[in-house]
Length: 280
Image 1 (cartoon, rainbow, N blue to C red):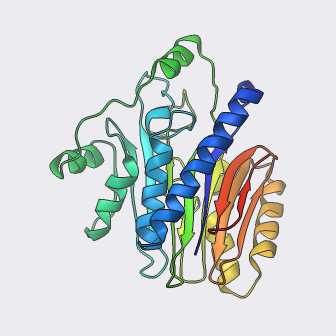
Image 2: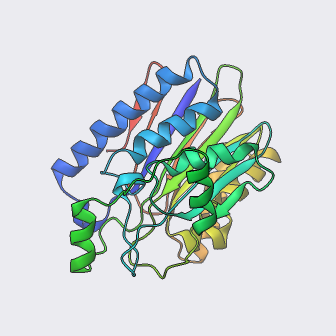
């Protein structure tokens, strides 16, 4: 059993010792709680749980830490994928829910598994998700000052359970000040993908991740026999050719864990019950 989580990238305004320590402390606590949850739950349920904890922490750009778009509205996206069934479900540009990842998870049982905008919100309301504003004063202040802090942020989790099953979940509050209607990578297979061989979650500039099909490429290459490390490195070399900005975390079927970023500012933590690995 192993789990790795990420909390997006540091922005320039985040580069302080206090913020770094706060994020390290939060990620360590969340990854430890998520591993305890994994002991008695599936990888699929665990990644949703882990991402919900990240969504509930305003240090990260998801859930209550989400960015405000150019029209003053918060719209969030999230997806979850089970490596065994290979079903991806997600929400795109959903408003006024506390945990988009749980709405994405609820959609797994539906024939129409990816919903956007008002359709996603209507589904959430119909299925008992209460109306909840994720706006915090800091984000409104940033919006009013047009400060694009934390704009390359997403959260994600990848886990392998005691039965060797893989799953991945990813959630984002957007890049901030984007054109309403913009689609990020987080609810697509470019940013969130898993099968029985590998699972990967991405963060960074969504347009770059989609252009490079980052998560899907890594998983496909591992499926075809490439090592996890080599699959990451080859895919990020291709990302470099388009000057892409991204980071990713992944686990393969042999419980190998790997992380990689195009710039060394991705925040992450992993835990296997004995050893923590956390960004420095």
